[in-house]
Image 1: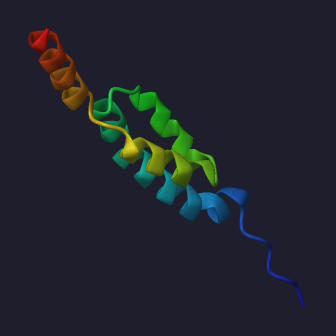
Image 2: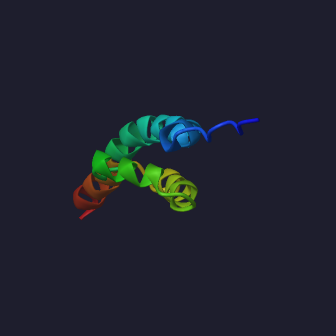
Image 3: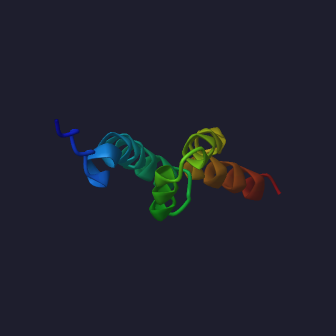
Length: 77
């Protein structure tokens, strides 16, 4: 009796790649809104770093809010 051959590596990694690609797809616009490079979304493909990066990115203040605060500070002087 023959043993079944193991699935190719790409087939084994397909679920991980799909989940990470979805996370990167969501994080790219968030990074742009926060004033960071959308290329940082590629960190979503690094295991364990991806969730820490997502939490850090979501905790940042939006770039538009920072710009408004700076404008208010300048008009106050």
